Length: 310
Image 1 (tube, rainbow, N blue to C red):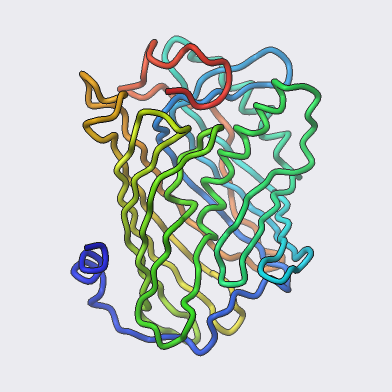
Image 2 (cartoon, rainbow, N blue to C red; image 1 turned 135 degrees about the vertical axis):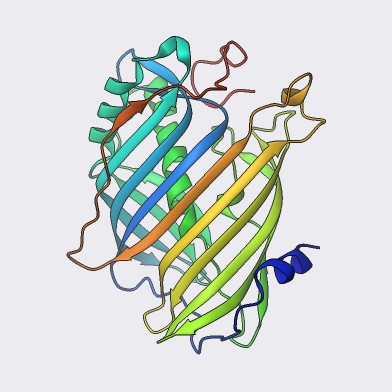
């Protein structure tokens, strides 16, 4: 079903498989990452002392410098230092004005922080972790985990496997970081993405992707039916991703607890990844609080202090 959907929508492009199929993380790589997310649940962001506020949407832009770490038999470590970052977020109406100082502290804490990636040799991301953040108590630990979840929405764009054989016209991915929910308790579900080669230009190969997933955030009674499309360009000469854009749209299924009596709240995200040169920079914008959304939740999700809540 997904294969036929992708064929009908995006497979009018020319097939051109590259000679090399391997990612190469043996040399430093720099990227500009951006994402905009409408959360399926309210998420708490907070300062290290006392202040906290709820968020239902955010925009994240950052420049990161990634260097290789230890290399294992099946996966390698990559350490990405956040050089610059800009964060915009929208909170709930009754807390308007509380987010600005929180976002400014988050900007300061995340600048210079290291994101650790565990990368499988075919290009899939096994894990995304956040290092070099102080954790003095349980509350700060929860704040740090929510910051990691925010960052995963940007770094998820690097999760793009290559096929086993260069002449494979299509290949399937059954788990994708883009098709996950940023839940502190994790998310489960099923996913299927179909990738295929598109145009080719001077050693750069287009990869067109499309797929579907059922996402269950935090082992809750809510299920999200998600659709995702992506277009990427892969440099087969240097073994690196040079550009990718993606869109994911999800809504609660009719049987979800959140949708009983209402339409529920959507889960939306768009993102982009751009490879940068060694000395190249990219504007990340200001860090600021945005006005509340027109349909922001009210008293539905107020009972838990930190983390995504049902």
